[in-house]
Image 1 (tube, rainbow, N blue to C red):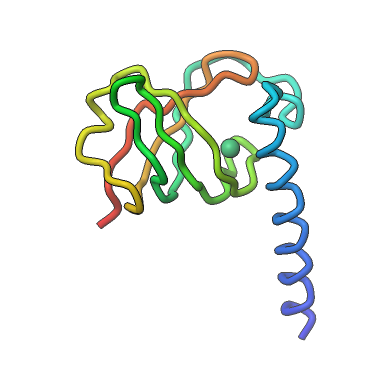
Image 2 (spheres, rainbow, N blue to C red; image 1 turned 180 degrees about the horizontal axis):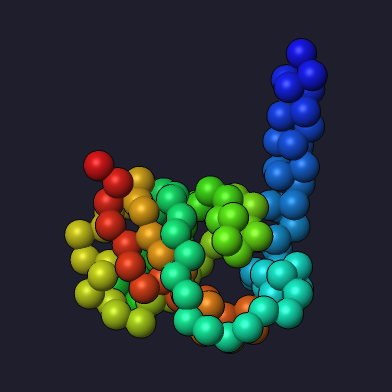
Length: 118
Ligand SMILES: [Cu+2]
């Protein structure tokens, strides 16, 4: 019983913070605020999610991702850039994916790898 109460409370908290973060993405603020200081070393953060829309031409993808523990992110829906547009080929809307996020600067992230989840 205790577990059930704790996990439903957690869900409420996650849902609330996810909404706030989505709004922050859109206004140009970002995860950096909640991460605090972090070194700039290139590191890939693994995540799973669903591809909502893919813009190969502009190298953008909208993903609903689960929590990314290594970045301290809750699950949310957001746009990502990619450096290599070719990685988006073969990704279709509605598809479950595994991907890696790289932080390139304060509040700046891109996806460097993405593959359909089988
Ligand atoms: Cu996010």
